[in-house]
Length: 208
Image (cartoon, rainbow, N blue to C red; front, side, top):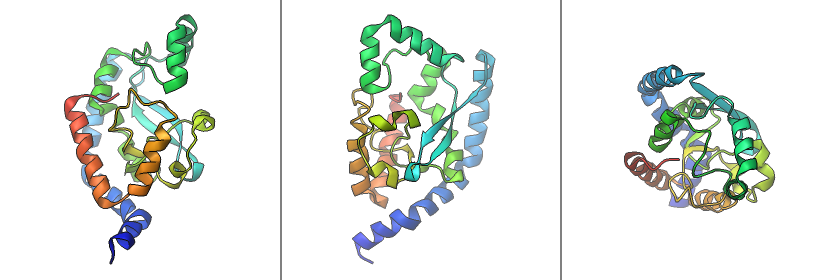
C-alpha cells in the first residue's frame, strides 16, 4: 500500500480505531486522576466539572467536558471586566482569550498550565465527538469569525497543531491556518509528532 493510500485509509478508518484503542487503555487511570482533581476543585468551592457546546465534525455541535477552572459566574465576570478595561476588550476580540483572565481560579491556573483540565475530553473521544489529535474545538458563537473549511472535515482534538504552538500569540482567526496545515499533513507520523510535542508542553507547564 502506497504512503498516499495508507494516509487516506488512516484518515478515513484507522484514526478512529487508534483513538478507541488508546483511550480504552488509559481511560481507567485517567478517570482516577480526574476524580482526585474534581475533589480538590469541589473543595475550593462549586461544581468540579464544566461542559460547553462546541462545533464538531460536519459542523454538528456537541457537549465538551472539562474540569472547571473558572469562577461560577464566569460570563458575568468577563463582561464586567471587559467593560472596565478597553485594552482587554481589544485583546479578547482579537484572540477570544485573555493573558490575565479574571475568571480563572487559583487551582484553575495550575490545571491549565499542566493541561490537566483537558483530561475529561478522553470521554468525548470515546463518544466519538473528538479525536486524540485534531483542531481545537471552538464554540458555535465563534463560527462567524472562523474563516476556514478544513476544520469541519475533521473531528476536533484534545491536542493538535494549534494546541502545541504559540497559543497565546496566535489570534482566533489564525487557528484556521493551523487547521488547514494539519488537514493536509494528517498521517500516523504527523499524529505521533504532535503527541510528542504535547508531552513537551505538558512537562514544561506551558498550557493555557
